[in-house]
Length: 267
Ligand SMILES: Nc1ncnc2c1ncn2[C@@H]1O[C@H](COP(=O)(O)OP(=O)(O)OP(=O)(O)O)[C@@H](O)[C@H]1O
Image (tube, rainbow, N blue to C red; front, top):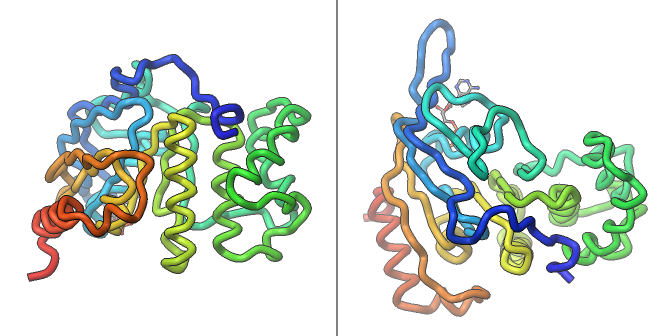
């Protein structure tokens, strides 16, 4: 079913770079002073890759994600999506943040319709997708509930479904399940991996969790701080679909230790 309702466009072949970042710098100005937040970032993400941005607080993960999504402007360098320079948010990119920000006075269905309304899209057609999307995120039959009638985890599932409403090719996720308990978070992570694998979407996930990044990603971009820069672009070589059995492997332990070492965690 994922394949049918979340078909990804074939504009870019799987070997080509879909997101290309070249010599990217970002400086913020505050109180007349400039602060360099990202220095010389060079990355190529392929269509269908699951990438995590991992690093200490303040290293610029969210800033990089917002730059890729066109929510803020770069200082110098280039960010291209499917060979087009990113200047503004584009419809093939969907965002999801740590807080669900659902409108409390609208039902689940009305919240899901919102991005289509804003894009002046076909609402009748969109409504036909709602049942399938709710089933995909494990909330079939919740169309007429209001957000305050749902748990935090359920609200994030709705938020994920809302991001998928416009069927974006690329998902930019900023700690989407960071505020949830570990159990709910793990369940949602597996749902997300399932959706990403079956739909062929490209995912860029900001996370603080080394274990989450190793379990979920094809690649981990490990970042350092002051200013934010890339410490290592790591390929994570496990078969898909990923299961938690990999946690018990020697390779998993080696990845974990290597990243902990890079980030100076532990002793
Ligand atoms: N709009 C802004 N104006 C000024 N400085 C900003 C702005 N947005 C972010 N920064 C600064 O950029 C740096 C990186 O912030 P960012 O939120 O990207 O880091 P992060 O790695 O995502 O952190 P965290 O893991 O804590 O969420 C921080 O020093 C922050 O103060």
